[in-house]
Image 1 (tube, chains in turn blue, brown):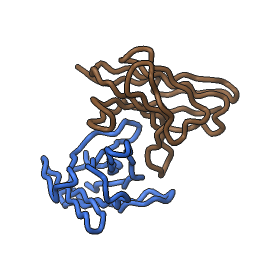
Image 2 (tube, chains in turn purple, red):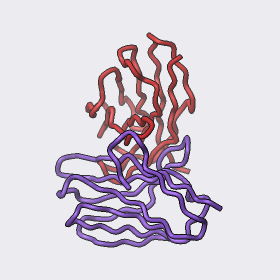
Image 3 (tube, chains in turn orange, brown):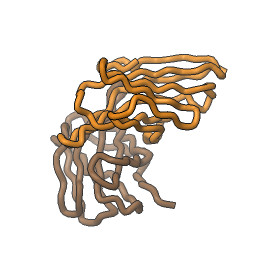
Image 4 (cartoon, one colour):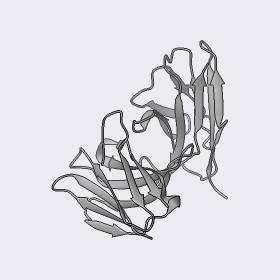
Length: 112
Length: 112
């Protein structure tokens, strides 16, 4: 899950299993949220986003769930593949305050 | 293909030297950003620019400088005043402030 400390949370899953990566956000007024995937030595890549007026959004093999009551965001990856191994982090965006915050990320390792 | 290019990929700096990191985009994006990424930490905003000839300090601007003379270019100078410059630097651009980020592939700066 999400951490504000110096240690990156890690998650290891078997190839073919589903992965769930969590993120806690801080601003209940945030307008939308984005999940990024970052492979080692590369820039972050957009995966999926969700507006604050939605609870769920699905993409290809990925689903993002938003629970505004507890300020929690999750990314579900179906049938995880070795190519999914990367650091995943969420971003919360509050347009009114020009605020864009990135979480520290979770390192996902897929075991073949 | 449109995209955002950072160069160099790796950069070594002697203590006391200024170095400049390049960021070029051909996406016709108005806004550009510089982030710093340290191990186990989220992205931290150094500077951002919403339009040519205008830029604003982010959360950790001390020891850095930028310019935005052209829409396509947003170079970052790491000055000798930055006491701990070793990090991974990411440039990003977006259509408008804080929406639809595209990231570059990053520059890893090491002080030797």
